[in-house]
Amino acid sequence: MNKNTRQNLLIALTYSVTLIGGMFLGYKFLKDQGFAVQKYVVTAQNNDEKINEIIHLIDKNYVDEVNTDTLNKLPIDSILHQLDPHSMYLSASSTEEQTEQLEGNFEGIGIEYYILNDTLLVTNVVKDGPAYGAGLKLGDKILKIDSNIVSGKQLLREQMTGKIKGKKGTSVQLLVLRSGSNTPSILNIRRGKIQVSSIDAAYMLNNDAAYVRISKFGANTDVDFTEAIRQLKAKGMTKLILDLRDNGGGYLTAATGLANQLLPENKLIVYTQGKHEPRTDYIATGGGEFEQGKLAILINENSASASEILAGAVQDLSRGIIIGRRSFGKGLVQEQFPFGDGSALNLTIARYYTPSGRSIQKSYKKGYAAYKNEIGDRFNDGELTDTSSVKKVFAGGGIQPDVYVKMDTAGINKFYTSLIGKKVLFDFVFDVLASRYDAAYLEQNIKTFNISPADFKDLVKYVEQRNIAVDQRQLTAARPLIYNDLRVLLYKYHLGDSGYYKALNQNDTMVKKALTSLQ
Image (cartoon, rainbow, N blue to C red; front, side):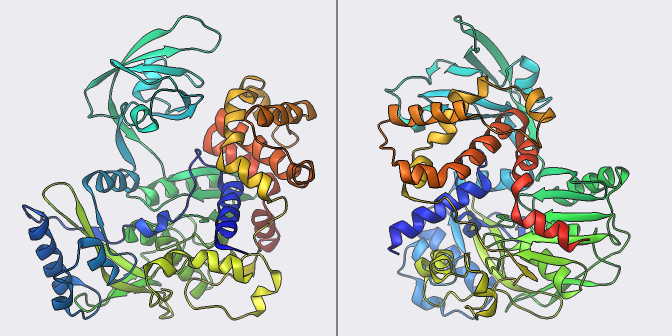
């Protein structure tokens, strides 16, 4: 299989598993933050001074011994690539974005949107946020932001996005066209602080088993998890399926805080150690909300960092069963050193080790590019798709599951991949299907609902209108997958993340395997 084909298949597979917000996961786990943020700020005035400060920070803090004399003449990215794949320099905007994601809040009006037919379509309005209070609704189309027109084919994508966010207390004026109306209306909205939970879904699968999905380990993850567990226990939960698939990590302390809710008192969760960092042990404090019930953790090749810390502790201490595929293999801990201009250095300062002393960091001796493409190599080697792979010995790194579940490639072909690359399924759901079904109907019929044959025929017409050649043989092969994708995307639109996972898990092999394993 050539490299481009392999990458396209991986994109399609990732899409068919996640489908979240129109965003492909890619290699976001290479941008983990890990340990902490330094309280002091490095006051470099220019790029040369910044390079000198970075070399100084490496010399005083890096996990291993480094000959910093060899780094002086290199640009920043090259300096950091000489170290490891997770030490990286972040621009001011990237630093802000990463901080927002992990802190669980941002300043804005509280909406998600999608660019449909060159117009901003509102796909989610955060309940009790500023936009919600001002009356903005799902399905509204935003034509203008203040004086900026953001609708029309003549506009570049970057001209349409990023204009709604702003500082708390400031105002933004939106010109909005509501479905069924020919007359736009003006909404004046005062921006505020928006809280976002890192718990995507938490609900009962049956009378005694619950499902909890965590997308990242942010500042409030352990608190959000504790509250979710209390509510589920009140509904009769005695078994828990914790889904950490595609969770690229986050704060180490968030992982240890969550582990405290699952592990008995005085058990070692993880320890960290580096050249300049003495060994630090993280010990369970006891008294957690779910120390006794049956536990299964779902992982895959995109589960990294903090996800692996939690899975490794549960596995080493025989607290639960790990189900899925070998995790990413990130055993390096980063600390963030901010610069005065808002940019920052994420520098590896230590390695972490599971309770049994395992370092799960995979090798990066072949360089940054090879490291980035390693997941593709797993796919090409059959590790992700071959049930017999459990008998094979693959390269080190990551958490090996107790129960292996292969990646399902049924229906993945060139035609399906073309639909993914051109976002046709998203467009069709938002443009056509969303108006045919409502939230109440979907929620009431979640166990039986599927799109109709008429819906599928309309999809084919929609594809043809986009000048995409329809290969009937490949369309037939991909049909079950397309049906499922459209179904769960429709649930995502009308019922949010929780509805999406409830719909997706109806046919999820790992969830079914976990339920069987917990009996």
